[in-house]
Length: 522
Image 1 (spheres, rainbow, N blue to C red):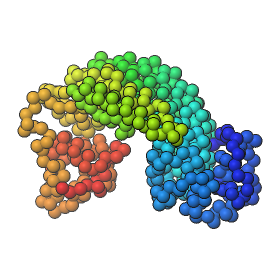
Image 2 (cartoon, rainbow, N blue to C red):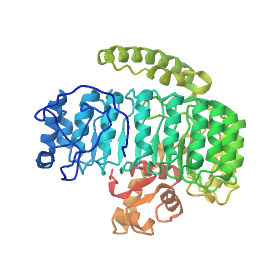
Image 3 (tube, one colour):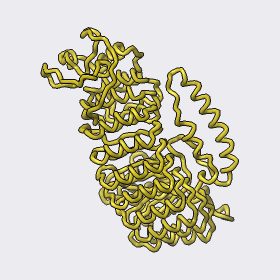
């Protein structure tokens, strides 16, 4: 993916015996021209092509480590021929990252690279960008929590403007990006259609960033997944974002949780859902949306024919925070805030020696402890508006609604049963039911896997044969919504939607698919 970028001048050994060259050039003895300000410290270019192509991957990495003066990472050595390499939290620093980049220039096996929380800094991202100019196999990279800041954003945006690599997924969460960084990224992405998934969560984007993002989304036709959670877009930022979303034809997944845009922002998103027929996943958790804001979204859902997943509560965000029931929210928020203050302090003291303070951690985590932001204060009446809107829309594709902090009544459950009869692909997660008798609780239902196994044994078929019969293609993977609908409509095994939910969990749902081959008998 990488492209052109400016480099800071830093002195480095000039002896050919000491300098490691690692750019995957074709075996032609023609040296590339370099900008005058470019120095060998950040240059990953190879002059001794014969040495490069005869050096093994492990030897190349060890030599690179020796050159930049770092200790080799044994995990990387063991896994450098795997498709997935997880180097999160390895304390690589800029030089350790450069050694990794050198080794990856000619690597053809690594498709996904995790480098979160390594204090790689802008210098490290520059090495990765240089590597990506030559590596056409790497597809996904995670450089979250690396203190990249504005300088790192400039390097990345210049790369994105001329991206010719195979990279399609980029995670940039928690890098202290602000408004100017948002402008740079949006300018680059306005013409970059290769990036399909972008994570910009846990940064410091505010209202102006929402304007830039809206302008970019209005013309970008490549981006399919965008995570903007845990920023500060606010009302104006989200309204501006929505202006671009109205005409966007590629974005399918959008996470706007923890952005404090309230009912006004919800109303703007409702207008988007009326006209946008491409968005399938929308997370609006923890934005102080009340029943009034939810009513605007509900009315839009009566017309929307694309949305499949809607989240309107506070949920776990990338493993960084805890999911807390509303009854415990006030007590837990105070306790967690105190513990988080201590954790952030310890974290900063611990890493101060590296010169890599994660300056955005404190603000990022404290956001969730603002009382009104902690949960969307939605009652059962608001939840009822949601499910009735699905009932009124015969073309609705809604599969999952998460209102797991809402306490509902048995009457609500009866209405939901009726809606699910019309839309068997639908699953609504709520907190619990008021005065529900013990005999009706989900915990007393038979394990669904055992029910299916019993049916399979009686009919002398394998359990996989049963699952294959649900899928017209006969394959062992199936979209979650289609699987749920097939399980509810089949008449071979008596099973309800709560048991189907548990079954989906057992089947290891990933990226909207269930995989029958991983079923475990109990």
